[in-house]
Length: 77
Image (tube, rainbow, N blue to C red; front, side):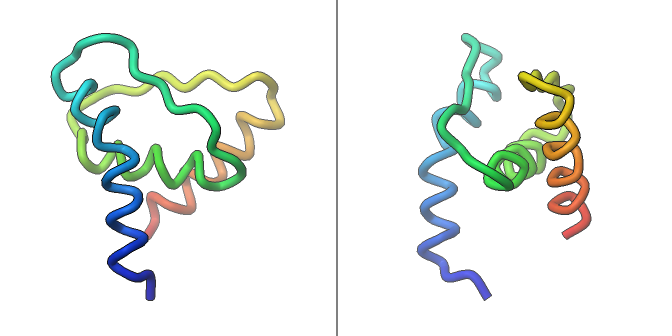
């Protein structure tokens, strides 16, 4: 089971983005995440801001498909 420290890490990391999206101000972005961390972070944000619509842009079809697979996995948890 993940430790509370890992939950705290993600909460701290995503807080500025979550708050900006909640205020509908600016264009917050998330960069520097690798692999399935992208889908995990987006799932956490989606759960915190469930009433929002999302547009995600990927640089290739392959990356888009991997992100889709990761999102399906994390949303099922």
